[in-house]
Length: 208
Length: 208
DNA sequence: TTTAAAATACCTGAAAAAAGGGATAAACGA
DNA sequence: TCGTTTATCCCTTTTTTCAGGTATTTTAAA
Image (cartoon, rainbow over all chains, first blue to last red; front, side, top):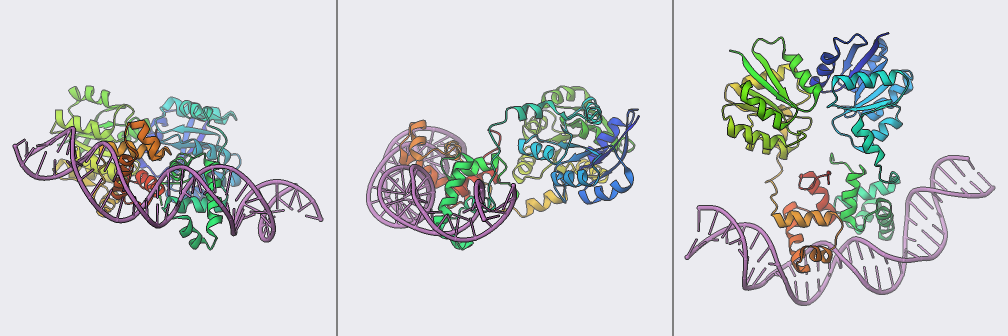
């Protein structure tokens, strides 16, 4: 029984690398690849893979969102997340979106095969390093309201409470209240620390 | 005249991908690979490549440092930087360390060949996207003194001037002066903005 | 309809940062 | 040795944040 796998990654080298690594394996068979989410969805109409190896940073859409879409439209297709780094929040979101596994791009052939085998047996496969990171989870995930996110972003741009209030048509004391809630939720003593921790917890991103 | 190339990257998939992509090319020949800097230096004793394709994030040492070492010991070997992202400061440092080129991991076979050919002709090869980024360079690179870096790091941890002064056996006004210099150098109006910009300019890192 | 969460808004006072200057001493490289 | 950079330190004032509360209205889901 051959497992059919499909690769979604904009890195030619990675696609070719996986294909080449596994081409002599009897238990798995490459059925195609896509460099972005849109093409992937189009190809799934005809390729019928058992497993998708899915990069989490695609040019047109995040792997998290694509994973959600794939699981919705093709519930029996298994998704394994693929990344160069093991940031906790991404891993969690990927799993929440329906992924059955997560491996890093430094994985060797042996691990690729093991991940696919585990996932085909209906279990979840986690890379050892990623698994360790998840286990040392530091407290509950921070959930910000829409307004809080907005104000956090503006604080990080250097705006004062008064400026933010003007921007959002609020009173300055309202902004100050949100700011206090942010400090509490993020666990920071002041704005500098809050911005740093927001990056660490992926509440702020570097790509602006 | 065949160009011999060597790959340094801890990502099995990438190494295999490049090797496989280029294995039918007459003009280039794969002579080996290493997963870390130490092994690379050991292998260079016998492999004699013309070009090294070098990942900038190695497990034991940065590609920037390895590049410097390679160019020192083997000045005729060309180095092409290899990365998943095109952060300006890394590109610059890589070039300053003696690299002759820089490509991204989404490069196709054609670009790999072109990069190697360009570099063998004694010219510098820059990926288009990276080249564009360097051209829209936003002012001079920020250079912080040792003390400034120290204080920036502590500000980002949420310490007040008084706390930092205690930590470093300084007066609070000294800390305040450094803080002012930091704001000026980084181009921020307050500490929150400064922390964000410090991450953007790679003056602060997420791995602490 | 009811409940809980989010949004909005406020008060006072203290702490901290920021602004806008000033200065001297120490360290480093040519 | 000399010139430049870095480090250290200060002053006063103003602005802004932070702490520790208070409250009502709106919104969304059960």
